[in-house]
Amino acid sequence: MQPLDMRLGFGLTELTMDSIEDDISEYFEQVVKEEKELDHDGEVSSWMREVGKDDKSMFGICAVSTRGKVKEGANTTEKFPLESVSKALSFALALEDVGADKVFEHVGKEPRGDSFNSVAAVENEQPGIPSNPMINAGAIVCTSLIKGRNGEERYTRLRDFIRKLAGNDQLDYNHEMFAAEEKDLNRALFYFMRSHDIVSGSEEDSLLPYMKQTSIEMNCVDLARIAAVLANAGKAPGSDEQLISPENLRIVLTLMFTTGIYEASGAYAVDVGIPSKSGISGAILAVVPGRMGLSTIGPALDESGNSIAGVRMLGKLAQRWHLGSFA
Image 1 (cartoon, rainbow, N blue to C red):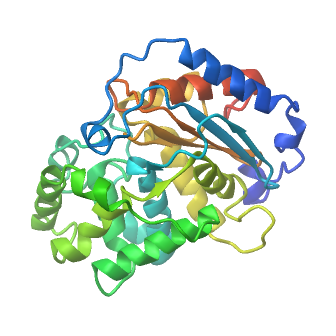
Image 2 (cartoon, rainbow, N blue to C red; image 1 turned 180 degrees about the vertical axis):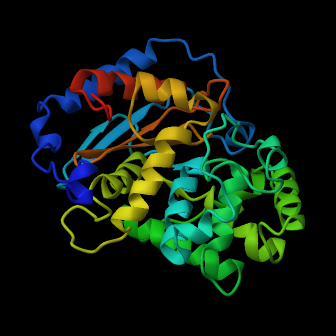
């Protein structure tokens, strides 16, 4: 059998972004221009509006190769909160901290097609167990499993992990965004799961870190650098430090592929075909194993809570350069 990194495509280091035509930056500009000429009838999340980040024309796209080369296209310095994109990262750290067996005692692996804030996802089948780590309930579980003596330490460890992935030690949560976020439903999910012994501890120690992580703020370049680590076998480009183990990375990318775009994950897998995680800020993190990490921003959302512009731009890139996992 081939080594794990070859089976994942991580061994194909010659197929980096350098082998994609040099006009990738020009193509980024083209797809952004095309987005600006289209209607975006989708809604912007209410808390994005509250903090003044509701400009539907704020389209951005960035790629970082596994060698660290950065290519940008419009609005790549504009900051946005990670929102649900953070779920893939807290899932990765939980796997690193306690191992897959422990994580999957508390959260499922199934692409049930649940919406991001689904209550049914913890009521059906095995009561209290969320269907997967990429919905709110599942992410609350994963963040609660991150090692820490209390909620502040747990959040700090996750924040520092994300800083390391992005190569930016200034990243932190936006206090105004955190204050604006809807919290009651997440509290209801937490207490329902606690009543079934899926999570434990106080709201401050086990839930608050999750609610902070969704408000961690960054730009497209930061997010694409994180995606490049996931594309580079869990190592930052140019580094030998293993930030995420290959086996845990395989699990994260698999569940990103099957559940990362919520109830639209199946259609996205067919139309785009890149392991991705979306957030209601309009951000999408996308990973082309062995080749590059991608990020997009476009605040107008479709009915599933995914960026209309981001899905469309990534689809165009995947088609032009055959980036899909089975292309």
